Length: 471
Image (tube, rainbow, N blue to C red; front, side, top):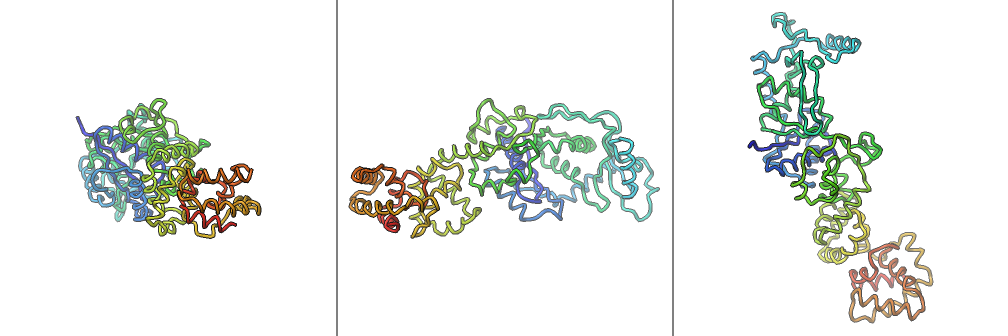
């Protein structure tokens, strides 16, 4: 049985798009699920728009998602000599020809074809002419001799049987007149040389499939299996754009989503497996297949993403969450400042507070916001609601409560709760009338993890000091 080889082939002209991340994931899942390989090719032939920063962003995004590739990344631009070599072979076999049409002639052809309602824009005027007729001093482009009649068929694993009439397909350019290979040529040569057996990519590439098949046929190469997956749309059903929110995978990291969440969420954008929504990565690898990828565009649903992330945050161990928090600090506002404060003592406080924090958070940013009280300096900055809670009467209660708490020989959630409850009963007031001022004084907020857990995590000295600051 032939080994399954997939590939992810991004163009390094910007960040790793969320749609590209899903394409990489589908390739990775399919290869891993079938004991095959996933290769990575950086399509950097557009030298003006490609950049090292974009390449680094793509590699960083894949690594963060946990999507691994086999072997070294391949850079398309480094293979230009090989692309030209294949064209020379096609010229020698008669499968390609030199075209000396000028830009002005090409524009006239296109305009005439449009006026006549023809899809084939190039009229093939140099297809069978004698090269001796070539105008002097003109560098030709090299075109493929595409079939003029019949049809080209792709049995796509997602789109089904797709048929193109050859009379509508142009003799595509393989090498430009300056000798640079076109995208169509480079992709086919690279996929062949890399041994790719399955091309899984967005359905915006479906129109390229028949032209690329013609190149395979011209070289006598086996055409890989193809699966063109639907694009991701916004919640309104329109093509995903900046107005829908974040487009790059790095933005989702900075918003506090976990890699395991993104793998699960992206896998379900366009692929179904019964009613199951939540998958471990191992389950995804075992279950993913191409027949259950739908043909309709998937819709981004951030509420669903939030809920899924909340599930994984609660499922993570406290130590795993601390690792994830430290991983995102370089990518969020104020992250470097917090990283500098992450002493062993603060790490331990975070771990102690984690059970209460993760029950309330849907993102790591929400979790960090809930934990802000742990590293806030004194005197604590109060938000508007907390300042409103700390009325003169509330501050008087805190002043008396400090004396009761100061006398505790044991300091934990249970002991402090007993002491505060006893104090509220003695003052003949509701527990909330004491607990809310305590929360405001300790955290600067009116919402927090359970207040007795907060007292335990901060410890006796810090808790009493913060309470005294507000009395």
